[in-house]
Image 1 (cartoon, rainbow, N blue to C red):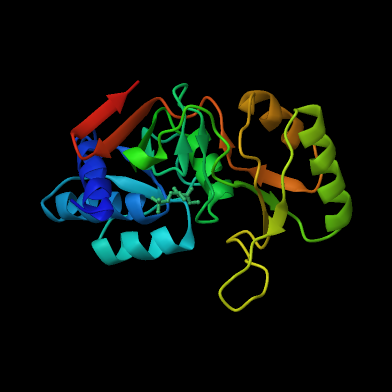
Image 2: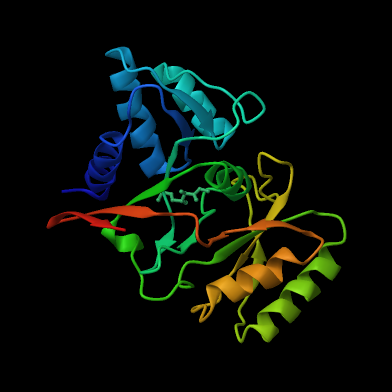
Length: 230
Ligand code: 5RP
């Protein structure tokens, strides 16, 4: 079975949690895209839901699949967000942002009563940090922001190379919010909750890919079947 089949299986399990009338957060990435497609099939069959997309890419997918959309101006809270992740640890702390949508993903997850993270088993790790940590930054004053991030890393006993993410054309990758992303290769993050707090206090950091206390359920698809962690 291919990795893509596993992602679709995880997405299919999450779709089973969707009920008529739900307001949904729609994640970003290849796994979340399966969720949007499967949700679209249920909408065509009569399910009534409304979704808030976490990226322009997901907005386009949802529109293509006929999933009605709204915004967090029009609705107060969401019932459920379903999103992928780059890493998931046993406390259901996550690294997200490999697709560059971490800011909207975190806003939407935080506005949701429940977040289900869907992934293939390769995303499951004992300790976060093997996947480079995405940090969304404002281009202005980047040198100062980098130095402040380095200081935050030192305080948290982590270190590693930091690279500005590049787009295919070789220029800096620009997020949907008009910001840049630093990918920090840390190897291991011993205390991700503490590092998250340190990064939150840096003015040039818009958001980072550590999702702490947001996911309640992980649906992991592997060759041996689906595993649900809560
Ligand atoms: C996008 C994300 C994605 O959820 C994450 O990168 C996982 O993507 P995929 O499902 O394609 O492996 O955080 O910002």
